[in-house]
Image (tube, rainbow, N blue to C red; front, side, top):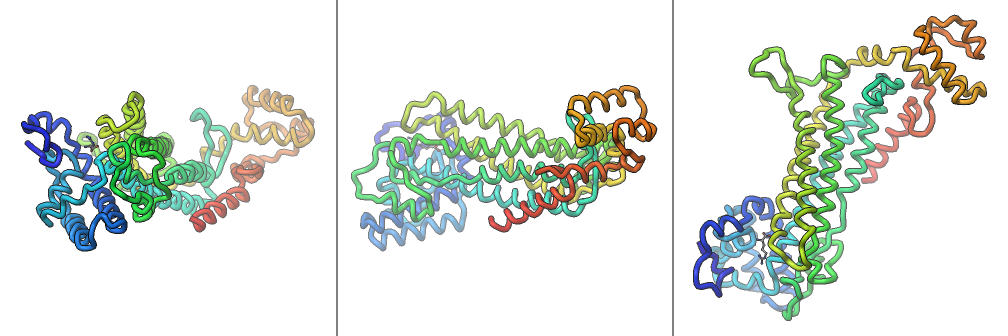
Length: 445
Ligand code: ARG
């Protein structure tokens, strides 16, 4: 196997096994569109500075546009997407194809392609996340009056509204959405490492690409993969949040909780047990978060030993980016479906939140409101719990000695929740604030 564009000075072709070993066409399939966009911007710049004539630039553009329209199967004999495009271009337009790589190296080219891919992927992920966060707010509103126990340590803690839980995930995912925005700095025009004697204008190329800026140092431009790390980190943390959401839904749809039901469309069957309807899709959201964490470690480990300048190890920074991008996008979509399509068992949730012990903290706070020091109040109510008498059965005169007027109807989840009006709390008033803020932020976006 031989790629003439790479081996003019060689007297023997590369061994087949070596050619296969060094090729990256599998991942590069995802970079074809980015590569063509980069080349089109490069051509526009070369034409603008007078390195290419208008005719040459037009022919190059036609060829590149045709590859874009037709697609291209990448041949491993040509190593990567860059050499495959150059070769195909020569088939299509002949000798002018040989002008394309003027004042460009694959080192700045691949750095650009990966940046363009990341920029696209961030945009696609932000869109998908907008749908998921909207689904969370919609459901928070639709089930505004649903109450359930809030948990710590997976032990019932205090009654909360379902909206409060859904909005907690909304808050985390909104931070994830914000992390998926980074300035796009164009590295094209750095050359292999040192710039070029050809009178190019990298700022112009950056403009063509709608970049936020241009590299400042050519050597850094080809070495820098910070943007990839930022992206993979943002993706891995998002994957972790999705995994947490998935875990909650998995617990909730178990027969033990029975808080929600997932429709047949979202569940999988068992080959043996006819009655099973399993939340496999959510388990895979949880499972694949592990891969995303692995890819972050993979990427950082690839980078840590590199001297400044292009090193072929950098080729291995592409798969983590592509895998995390594709994996997380699919997981976001699965979570959005689950949130939209779950059926809420409001009575079961309410029943679980009616466990009287969940009102212990409310009673402590009522004593605090009478001026009892917190720790004293905590001890008084703790002692009642220890006696094992349900709060509703404690006689009114015993409450009266504590200065409390307690009726059996004091102990409802709604009453308990209504009291927690502090900032960010679970009371209906604070939930209304949070929903309004979430909707307003959405509109601004
Ligand atoms: N094939 C490499 C990649 O896809 C690009 C080659 C960069 N330059 C080099 N001298 N090997 O990342």
